[in-house]
Length: 350
Image 1: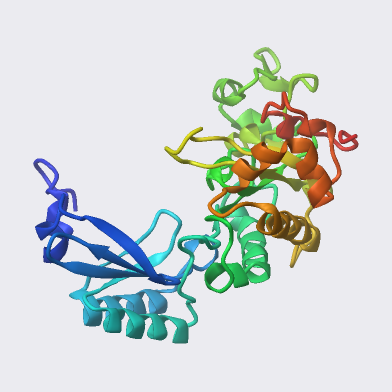
Image 2: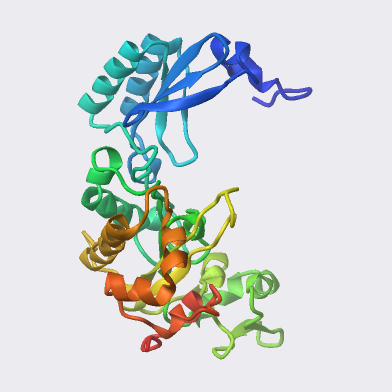
């Protein structure tokens, strides 16, 4: 049903305590992993943050259980954070701890705040995306299992964000995480006879580098291999364009040092440190091993409060590779453009 007239004020959907204290919040503190206390002039409230499923895929049964918790503890109010966490409210610390216990009994660990590993985000990957080059939710799950102790047990020097995107379009927010996994195609797509059923002009226009040449007379298109960056946008736009052997040639890259922050030097995009790893389901051991090596080296070497990119910039990229033991690739050079991760071809690393 479409509502007529202007949109309803967002305050219509807020609990009374939040309405009363808009603009009056004085601060907050972390009581324990996953529980935060918020203080206003005269009131306080507690939020309880739980881990999400991979790619935030919940059954209706689980959603009903969340709704029951929200009804019992805070009048039916809860929210999902931008990183997919289910987040609940409580009026007292005792209620917050009881709520935490119930969530953990449901199988949802509470934590992912402060100087810990925050919730790992991922795109849908192969679930419904034609561009996916890797299984983003499965990699997110494997990384979460390996690094779980940092979610609500062992502290890190600062917050740590991980994101997994199935392709270089990075709709999973990959380039802005401390450590990102980004799916990449290493072969050039091919044009089949079925291309005649596509919108040829629209398909040609979607290419970000102008690698698709329209051939009006033959009612087809040609992909110029010397320009193609393998992003896969044309594959998603036209069923007559395919990757021939993606099961053999697709994989993913590892980037580090991204962050979305107002703290100087501000928002930064991640940099490629591992240009290609093959897809090795179901547990993606090579990827997990490389990411855990980065995390544990940073944990051991960084100063308190030092985000991953701040530590790297203090010691320099050369020492980052030395300390982590990661091999150095041509794609990791200082003048790197992020398109290099899409330019990779088999044998492209040196």
